[in-house]
Amino acid sequence: VATPGPAGPADGAMVRALTRNAVWPALLGLALNAVVSSAINWQTGLDSTASLLNKPLPGEYDRFLIASFPQALRISYARLPDPTWRPLVVHGLSNPSVIAVDEINKRLFVADPTANKVYWYKLEVQVPSKFLITDGIQRVAAADISAKGLAVSQAGDLYISGRNIAVGAAGRDAVYKQDASALTSEKVSEIKPLRLWTAGDGNWVPVLMETGMPSLKDPMAPSTPQMMQPGPIAVDLFSIYWGNAIKGNASALAKAAVTVPAPFPGAAQVPKPKIGATSLANNVKSVTGLAVTASGVFYAGQPLGGSPGVFAMTRGDALNGCAEGKDCLRRVAEVASPVSLAWDGDATLFIADKSTGAVLSVPSTTIAEHELEKVADARGLRSIAMFSVPSAAAPVTASWAALVCLILAGLYQ
Image 1: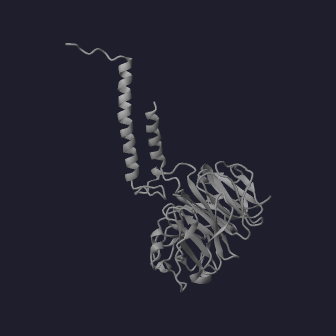
Image 2: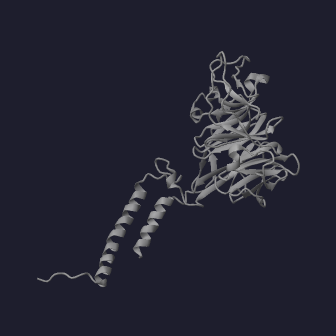
Image 3: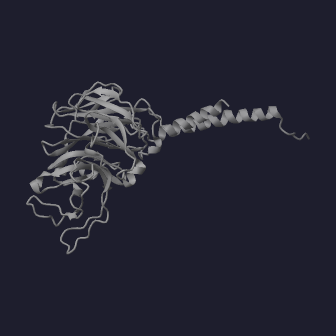
């Protein structure tokens, strides 16, 4: 009986070929089947659990620059890099001012100071035209508030800087939070935003009712001398940032904790807040624009000396603030009249310049001075925001694309 000898080079090559021809197509079939059956939303690039692991490949986003034009009583958008403005909201606004976007829930927020309300609209990108539209329904996000700044957290909560006009002259400038769950309520106009931080001397401040008397049902809010008249605001996971439009004796730029346990009024002795606000910068007379990016905190304003422009500090310096005399503030760009900033979530900071009537941009990846690049003409603009969505033309997610490429590479080894 003949016994098989050791496999030679030719036999090994044959085994590898057979294995490759049998296994790799099977794996490719499994991968493609997983892509089809993974409940991927081909318009958002997310799976059924909205996992960010299935993020589209870089560059596969449609970027929309949204701007408010108060004199024209409208909100318009430009699908970048095309600088052409197209109408988005043309009815129902008496003074569209600051705006903000919730990219996850596809919501556009618009402050209307004349109406003393903040409205929101549902956003949608039409396919295949890629026109940006709303669902045509104007909803109330907050009422009886004169808003000067808007920001949206990753959870979809709306943050508002301004004053509650329901209590008249007794009201103080403050930063408020409207929970995301309240935005879908039919009685949202009756739901008062929670007051987080108030301009004051550092003590707890009760919520005032329309009668001018303190409420015994609402928790008190901590006050801080770092707040005078907050304008632009921004928020991340842990902190809320505000720039004072009129700073008085307060800092120009400050931050505080997003959540502070607050006592109810009526106690014999109300403890002082254990957590106060942190001064970040005080090199400008007032802050007119604010954006928190992955690399740092950017803000716009008129400095105490020199030309107006956009300034920034790194994330590390923003942890404890930039002490006077410390060399941590950088001028990013010289802009004649910056009124709003917006970050695209990637590598670009957009600047609304009122004096030139244009939207400009600079890189946001480094805290250094950059040359300005003109993005679009925008006469009469007031505020800008970015809305980026995965392109419907690129539905395959990065993780599956990498797996498929790996399998295909194996077929040709």
